Image: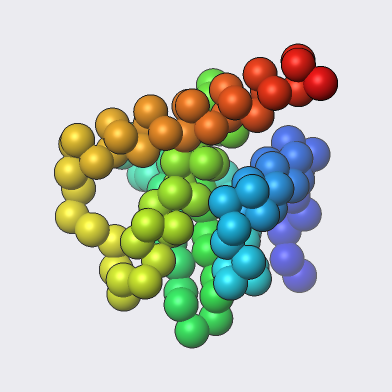
Length: 117
């Protein structure tokens, strides 16, 4: 029997699906959001895995991460930009910083746009 997702995790799942639509990621038909395990939480605030043959994305988020939506967008950007690769790029600090800036800007634009409507 699969584990039941918490209300917050279901909200993050819905946000991930919304952002996948916003980013034009229709080819990724299954996006799962899970809480990161303790080992993953020590290393990063979020991580993602993808499997091209099944169009599957799994995003793991640290429960304590305050900017969960930005982290979701950051991880989706990894898939958008690297999803054609069989495995993730080697860690690159400048690339990660660029994804951080892009994800923060996208989330800011989403909410700034709502204020003007």
